[in-house]
Image 1: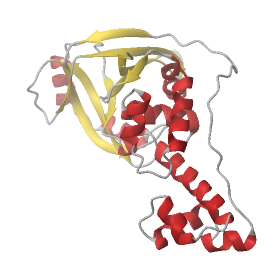
Image 2: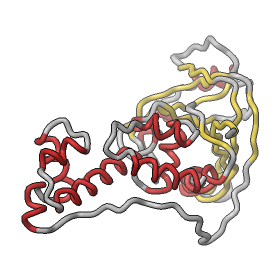
Image 3: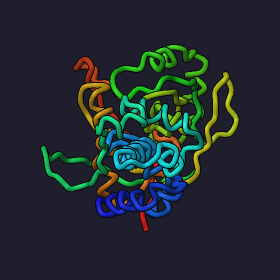
Length: 288
């Protein structure tokens, strides 16, 4: 995967002045657009679109420093108007494009490169399970994207479940894992930025297609799942495991993400406050 990532960085450099789409990049990488963008973000802390934008502005700064006209530079890097380029460049560098040549000052954003480093090695236990098609059934709502800490709106969603809904969920639950699960999907920015909202569902897995008590159904096709058990302080351990999946396991595995809801279940330890056992289920497919 490291070799592929570095190849894509060079691919971006070659096509920096062209109409470069995320779909083109994912095709060049040989993986899905969803998978590549998510891996890129967890490894770099920047979205792929932001990286391309900053590289273009960095190269634009070099051209301005060499004396190229502002209008020509704006057109070269795909801006439809001079005003649009000027706003973007000033926001990025705090300078007007016209001031670069005058002041002989330029902001730089070098291209990145990926290397394999070993720092604080850790073990990740996982298994691959194949599941037939099923439905999530439960209560759901749009909640703010939050990668760390307790999401209060999810807590409130859990507290809103009525006794009748609990009885109905218990009745229709017929697919492993036979536990209450938390599923997330339909995220703004496809989960690659901690901004916007996602849909969060609390419920069960079932093959039933008709449910009552104001419960929602979300269909999931037959898929393979990478399952990651974890145990420790909640929610820190669960969230750190999730981060490790995307930053470490997926880039080194022979699997890529499938654009379907991921989910988890959690069981709290009655003898240790704030301590829990969990499993994270991530939909994947084997790389060819």
